[in-house]
Length: 82
Image (tube, rainbow, N blue to C red):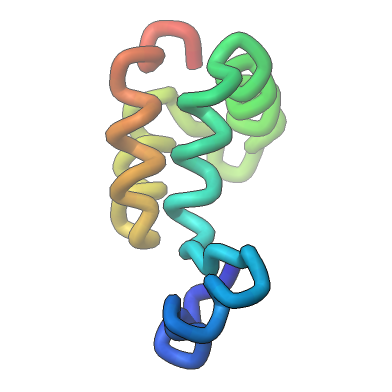
């Protein structure tokens, strides 16, 4: 997982069976593969935010602003569980 994908071209990483992906793609894949575990974990993280506290909608807005576009897309279907 890296945000520096240009330094890990697929033609080089594939030789070693490695697939370089962004943090956003990694998180989104994790949510998609195991939403029953990922969504409650993200909910617990959101609930620990105190200064300021965040609603699920505000959390998604902040995540999107931070560049976690794929992650937010994966979480939209679970918004009421966050």
